[in-house]
Length: 435
Ligand SMILES: *Cc1c(COP(=O)(O)O)cnc(C)c1O
Image (cartoon, protein in one colour):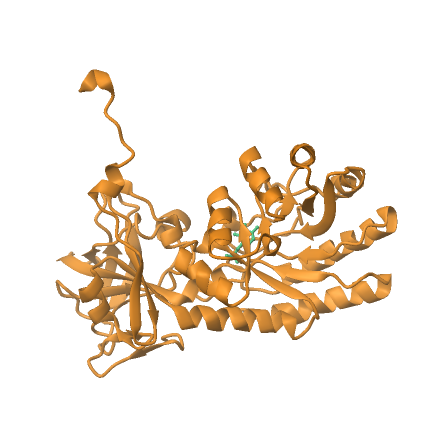
């Protein structure tokens, strides 16, 4: 059941890269995120090849919100990836690791003036989300003496089978220009008259953790329909067709993967057909994968502290990582597979719930799981935490966020150090009258 980039050594320990997970935990402490550099590279190359082998011009914009650690973003920069950012700091991280502004897209429904300024100055492609944002961008660009490079985010009105919080393509969702009412077309018409914006793109995003190709095909049909209408009505050639991200990964044993090759084949067929039928210029395809690239590259190691036996019910196993370290189980009811990294060859015979150290009932990593006979000091490993793991970690109960280690073959180095008392209290002040 282990994914292909992991193995088990003669001691029965989990191996990541070429390193023993038990030794990594001893060397760097727990809770510990461990990322496999080679796995990120493999996933990036596979995703890129899926599309670039089917269409002449393709660019992958890694979605930083999945994992914005600088070392992770640097790995993708070294592969030639662009970036999808949605905040000032993500934008600055992308620029700082050496991704050119022209290879960055900026998404989101609330971009501040400061963010827009930074984006315009760096020639970032801004996916505009509302009429008011369009006016704001035109004004800022004029003041800066620049032409802002923009696309429009379209609301694709697509129902994808995923958690409601990450199904962002529904008509009622807050994102994008509405299509049926004519607002999407009106946005292109308005932008065409603006001297300080250059209309280059179209964008949609159907959601996240999608394991079925059909929403992506529907998306391609809708977007390409608008691309033709915009050409026909306003003579605008859309150069960048940005399909967003969203391809999911298997989390649970038995989940089936959605191969990016299948998605690419079906989406590119739609693009080819429409470009041919309507006699359009061939656009560049932009893709914004996050989870697919980094999701399964990373595990969370956590030390077993206490085991509470409960007659007739699953035992409680308390580990040193909770919802603060990994929020997805508490927030989305997400499943993350758990094993004991020091007992990989033993039979999973015990029924347990795995909990963290925080004082609330939402603080669990997994319920009704099977593990080998658990003892104090065992090392739990939580799989597939590379996306929306450390990126969403918080400091609930003043728990320091975990450290992260990057592994490459035999090498391992800290890429984010563990937080300390000083880190957690640095921003607090006691007012004068209480001193
Ligand atoms: C979150 C997000 C992505 C990445 O989604 P994944 O499911 O991680 O691939 C891409 N584009 C936009 C606009 C997003 O909000």
